[in-house]
Image 1 (tube, rainbow, N blue to C red):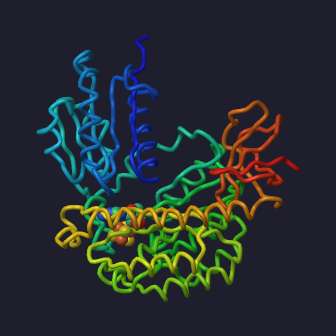
Image 2: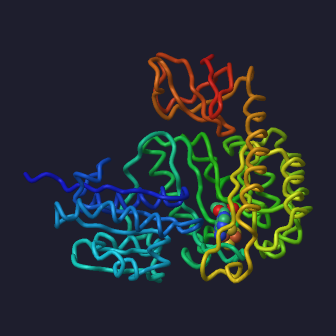
Amino acid sequence: MSEPKKLFIKTYGCQMNVYDSERMAEAMGAEGYVMTDAAENADMVLLNTCHIREKASEKLYSDLGRLRPLKQANPDLKIGVAGCVAQAEGAEIQRRMPLVDIVVGPQAYHRLPQMVRDGGSQVDTDFPAEDKFDHLPQRKAMRGPTAFLTVQEGCDKFCAFCVVPYTRGAEVSRPVDRILREARDLIARGVREITLLGQNVNGYHGEGEGGSWTLARLIRTLAEVDGLDRIRYTTSHPNDMDDDLIAAHGDVPQLMPYLHLPVQSGSDRILKAMNRKHTRDDYLRLIDRIRAVRQDILLSSDFIVGFPSETDEDFEDTMALVRAVGFGAAYSFKYSARSGTPAAERPEVMASVADSRLQALQALVLDQQRSAQHAMVGKEVNVLYEKAGRFPGQMVGKSDHLHAVHVDDPTGQISELVRVRVLASASNSLSAVRIS
Ligand code: 5AD
Ligand code: SF4
């Protein structure tokens, strides 16, 4: 029998891309491809790209340049580009890099196997009418007790800086029955924790029994499925946190006490220029309501500094908001113009100013992150083991609050959900001993 063909996938960017890469791997698996960790011995290399921030296409072209010797050594090597840069640049990618065989956008990747079968040079950046998820094989390649499940894609919010509405397209929610079937499949394969994904996941409104369902209803239904111990969701928009979703944080034990809720800026003037459609006060009041039902919830956010026209005063408003909320984690980015978005037409803040703002914000956020982690020392927490640690007798997993935890546990097994006592806080993780 001939050896199976090998597929290497490099994934850039967000968790939705991680999920898409898994689904593409499964689709190619049905064609007889197995995964490899090394591009050097692959029969096909797929780059699943991200376009959200800086230099995405430069990164892609330099990675493609590095594949050139492999293609020269093996002319049968297939090279594909998927994801949001594929969507944004389309056939231009092949014009610049003729070694690329296949360009496929995020809404068309169920057609990847057919494109590979057909051979030759192919570009598909359609937003097809059919649902790609209906044309993908059942989930199978699970690597541990946690999994992502995309429930919603695309975005209609049109923040002035963001390419997502253009590359991922309009907001679409998957039907409830498909999601529940995929979740049951995952759980039957040993998954105990599911993270529901969407660009605006809390705006979920998929069709289900009795009409359109909210994310809260979906979470409440998933919480009744035997074997599912933990539910998370990301990423959310402040304007889509409805009453029932907030309530769910207080009364659904499986819903983990962690919420990523991007605010982008603390200045009302900048929020308006960003087309965010909420004020700083709206955000602060929302946080109060969430904390009223789940006092220990760990909050996380995204920030952009140096958005066009941002003044020192605007930036101070962002710093003040961060101080007022107290985040357990946060991601801050320097604004970078994305062509085709409204903000790309506006004059930019001086790079050196944006740089120093970024440094100041990151220092503040790091400080808050460390205190949140430090506050766990001495406490008992739950950890779901994902893998063995670097040292003998050590297991690694996440706490309910999504802290990485190293546990001394020589008999520990992957997929166990255990009770531990936190002993210390290091820079990016906690260490603990098992007590149950
Ligand atoms: N420049 C900088 N950061 C951006 N983000 C999105 N678009 C841009 C951009 N043009 C950030 C936002 C978003 C996160 C995923 O990426 O903070 O929440
Ligand atoms: Fe982009 Fe704004 Fe939509 Fe988030 S809500 S995906 S930042 S347009």
